[in-house]
Length: 288
Image 1 (tube, rainbow, N blue to C red):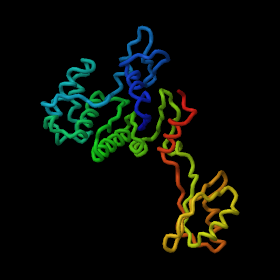
Image 2 (cartoon, helix red, strand yellow; image 1 turned 90 degrees about the vertical axis):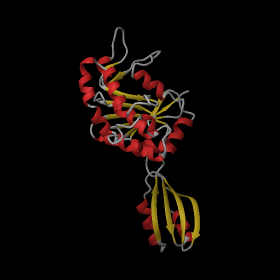
Image 3 (cartoon, rainbow, N blue to C red; image 1 turned 45 degrees about the horizontal axis):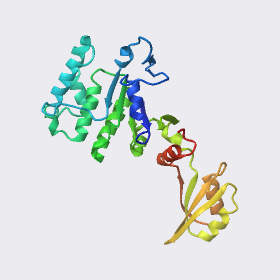
Image 4 (cartoon, rainbow, N blue to C red; image 1 turned 30 degrees about the vertical axis):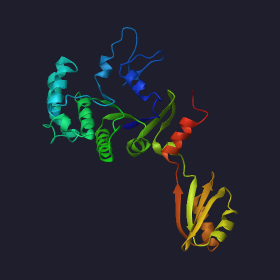
């Protein structure tokens, strides 16, 4: 699964992730990761965190070393000593997973920003994590770099790794995530699949040949309201309809055709994730 942790800058995304990874301490409440408590009296969260890979903000590497050599040094110095050989043995595998096999011998200073982000993800994958936590992995990338990272994360999720990715980029989250949580002012204000958060199609865009006749028909239909009448554009005009509960596109089409109005296009329009996001983080009911 690929879970998107969405919120504006300053909402608390990075703070939440740092608490989950035992990097900062909460003032109250508790944190569990993979079913294991992270905090508690005398508790060492190593058992849970050993199953997690993470990249917080921009990864740091030795620019004068190659990508492979960087990963080898990290494999030797991070994680349990008993697992060192396994981590070293995975260096070439994770480079292949993130698409850096051909560039493994190049110095990191010659890498693009997108390549450095993918190298950071490779580092997070060295320990074969069940959960991969990434904080703003596409931050600062150009469209090509964003696409590379998006495809990589989708592939990892499809192969069985649970990927938790924070972002303030709505289009990225909507394009790749199976579920989304929306954070505003430190509170989770909505959660679910992007399609569910967007809700039902509540508008209908209809292209007709006779706008006046169509307007008369629409006024007789229960649950249907005319918002905008655009046109005519050439031989057609466009009506934007508000569809209330119980109204259907099929009924609108049947009524227009029965009245002799030619319908050349009928397109339902959904709220975008951006519409939902703005209503959640800017609404008066958002916790402050």
